[in-house]
Image (cartoon, rainbow, N blue to C red):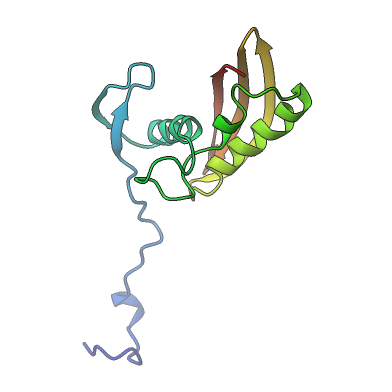
Length: 140
């Protein structure tokens, strides 16, 4: 078999990688306690990414690149109008998630305020599935 890039590889010898999907295994993190244990894969790994990306302040930790995290922390504790929150929270969440290749869309945001908490519900579209997400933001 020739190693020249100009050599034609017969179709029966060609290798296709279209059907191979890389696993997305990661360490399991209990977002309530911060404890790690075991491994997760698939939708569970994507859900964990969603919660971590939203809760991690962008540009604050040198271990993450500038795409990772959200800018929600800039809104928390600030005296901003409800109208601004309804605009900026969905934008900040979508901006934190959409750069990931596994996420196709972030849509249908609903914001509900209870005392000093803001509950944000939305849907994340991935290949062949939709993940419903609800996040509680304190001090908003």
